[in-house]
Image 1 (cartoon, one colour):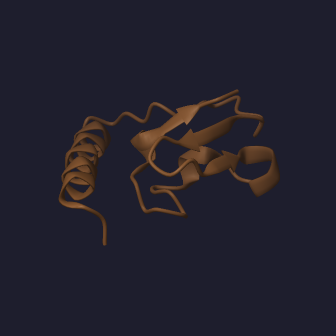
Image 2 (cartoon, rainbow, N blue to C red):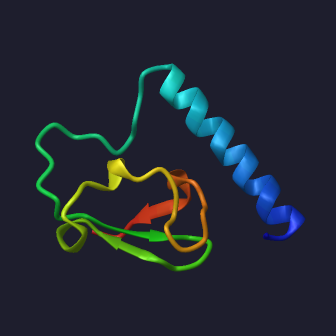
Length: 77
């Protein structure tokens, strides 16, 4: 269980993600995706490497390490 601030942050990001999905959008979907991108969680530093994982980043909805929602990640490459 995280701090109150972390939980509030996750709540606000989850609401933003839910709103985006309701509008039919996903900022990480690309029809020509080649599984070469790398993303890092801004909260805990976990790195998601699509080529190593074998599946697109868009297939996960939260950080496997800390549970932060997908929008918490930043694309590194």
